[in-house]
Image (cartoon, rainbow, N blue to C red):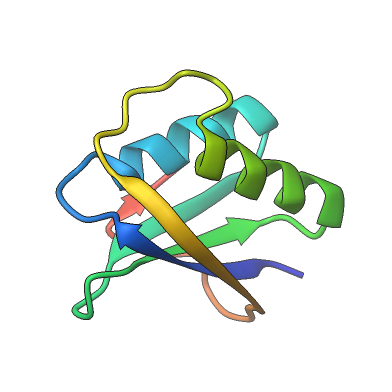
Length: 91
C-alpha cells in the first residue's frame, strides 16, 4: 500500500521536492511531492515495501547520497495512503 509522508523542518524553497525525487529514484520508488500551505512537504510513495520506505526516510534525513538540498528535515510522519498518486512534482 502506498505511503504518505509529511516532512517538517526547513523544507520549502530549498529543493526538497527535487531532493526527495532523486532519493526515490536511487531506491527505485515512484511517487510525488507537494508543498503544503502549512509549510510542510507531502510525499506520496508508490511502494509497499516497508524496508524501502525506511531506507528512503533514512536517506532523506541524513542525505546519504550527498545530493543538493539546502534545508533540513526535522520530522517525518508516515501514514497509509489510498488514492491517485499525484502532486505538483512527480517522479
